[in-house]
Image 1 (spheres, helix red, strand yellow):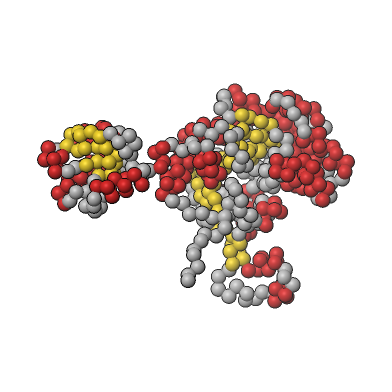
Image 2 (cartoon, rainbow, N blue to C red):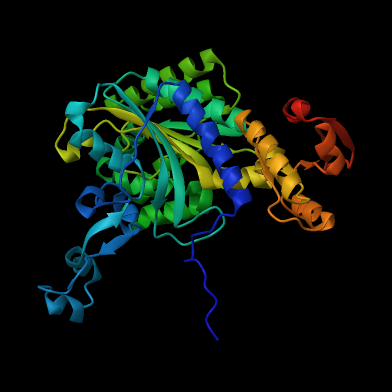
Length: 453
């Protein structure tokens, strides 16, 4: 007996209904991106490993899917590496390429490679899948889509304010109540200086970024394991527990970080972004979160994370400023800032909260019955007219029993069932059945588009 096929763990198939809902998300995000003047690009699914490695931190590098070289991939490989089970060095010999981990690093590569063709500042958006060798769990997949918008070639904090407005508009249109959490990487650098561990910034950010998942005590244990002194850990704790309103938190941070030039700069930047955003109005909650680090080494300024208020699913959007990302590809002085929407997690939130519009459940607005050659031919003419008017319509392909045709319409979630029988054919009418309430009416065929609109 043949083994039943399945998808790899952390990946999924999508049915027509699911795709209709996913496209609702993509279309909503894409429309907002375009409203703000962003232009679409695409990059390859795979990148050279040299492009990807070292850009996501120690833990991110471990989650890269590496692609085995084609042909005789063991040719020229030191067999001692195999005998010693030296997987890290062995992978470097066997794999030159990897699946992209996110869309930001490939975008930085794109900017460097196409610099002469771009007008700065350049505002791009990108909607494509990414891959991470993570442990699959609820809300976390190995293959998932990101919807990114970035601005490169501008240092202005107006870009951050605009991106936060985009976040707010997207989630308002989707009907999801969210909290937008903000921090600044310079604040984290100032904190590292303040507790006497400036060289441990990466260790600190990787650990405290897990505070919502594992709690402060476990974070402190990880910090100790990463070499922070007990005194530094003790000094860090009250900073992470700063409370009050957003303005009060900023004031407290300004006082605490006054001895740190970089920390003070971070507070000033964050205050500018918060004040500018609130001045424009915001539907979302805005929160200053000192523990927010996002764990990605390329962030240098503002850090953004968005969480749904009515669903426990983790971050559904995030981003930040990365002033030196293109520098690793040989192009210095290009500042960037961007956000990314996690379409798969947004899908799960909309589904859990029953927020998908009813029309996403079906593709066809009206299905015509098929009673035979003459009736089907007339129905096809009317279907063509409806399609030209932008109304989705189809004719049942076979002259089957009425019960079967109506059953098909029900199963497909078609809102209207149209009948052109012998009498309708004779007098130029069509009978329309509302599948929701069972009511029906006979109208002139010429009026059908207006009735269905």
